[in-house]
Length: 272
Image 1 (cartoon, helix red, strand yellow):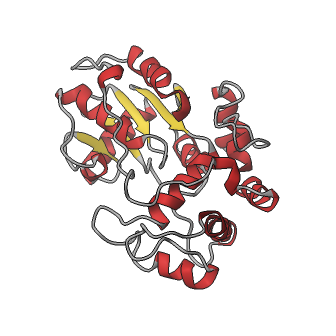
Image 2 (image 1 turned 90 degrees about the vertical axis):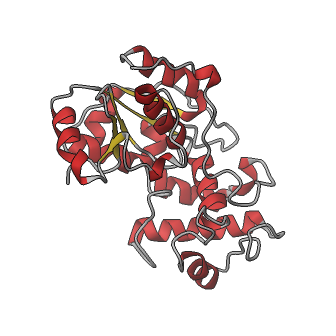
């Protein structure tokens, strides 16, 4: 199995387990800058040099050796499940991707047909009932995760605990898991623990939100999208995320965590 979704700086100063929709573009660019003194020109997910990635065959033995011997500071970043699934909906389902097409080809037509969602027309910019469509998408997301029907779950809405867990199960250990909602504080703590070739000033680093502008803007506050049934579905899908990463299930309006993450608990509960 190895370490899918894992990135490492070429200098082997830090190892990062990517969790989709949790500031991964910004984190990847910071890692790239720390080695090269410049940002990658384009979406960091497209970079095939300048950084080690598990998806690159040549990088795998280096990542595996570093992770198994815990030779580099290792971290990941998580996000409130309510805002994460909303972001996935507006970006991946409603939005046109950077290649000018819909995400994953026939995915959106499939959900339109089977679940009756709307996505704002051909360009994703038309008016539509965002709340009704999101709730139907959430039903689809639950079906993919619970029953793998009508398709396998997508990495952008599968549970964060699943992404975090594969790294532990296969022999990795985290030194830090921080919150997207307190990004500067968490990322600074990581940087304080590593030696970088080029210094990083987080106050001047742009936010590389590669999904911004893909889809329609969210028209309502977060809590408006989640009625009792939607919250029930959220608990069914993301119970572990709420519990282990300390997010507030009872109040979708509160995006901030309720407490700090207990790394020992994470390794014990996700390392089975």
